[in-house]
Length: 116
Length: 115
Image 1: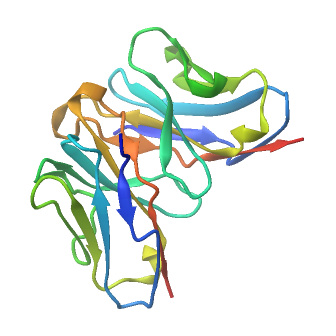
Image 2: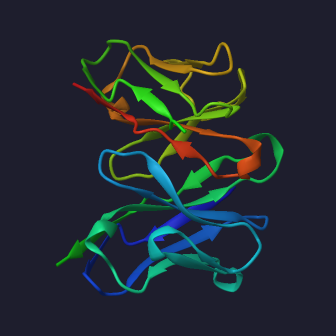
């Protein structure tokens, strides 16, 4: 079974500081990995995805994530935080075969707070 | 392009009452998902439809939850009777094969409070 662990349920940074949100996964097959963002009172929105091509993936709003197979990690980073980045971020892994093709398994989420 | 629509946005009911949620996916998306998101947790898949057929309902509590997608477009999720632990946000998402596995479009959700 696939699973995702996000380290840290809350992360707080100052505006302009580096953002680092941690995600580790467990999968018996090469995974497809995702970061989704959820702004208050909204649904989830895809930030970026890894689909076994380049290990460094760039997403929207200046975010990027690096797939490290040896560490089973897919950490999300942004060089300089902006106030508008305050949201909850979810790491997820997808089934890519069988009857559950496309099914997402989510981590528990990390709430990012950005201070002025 | 219109996004995934859900209604109602908020619902408050007493335990043992019934409730229904509605979802209209993005036009042309054959796959529809219902998720339950309890406060402080990530979304958990309840049921996955491909057109009007169920692909995965292994985590749907079938003694009280039911879902249908009769014409392969809109879907309804029902809880009968509700329990306190059903308080959560219920998210609907849709996808199509051209997007690749795992890429889904989510609606704004329905926040259910059971008192």
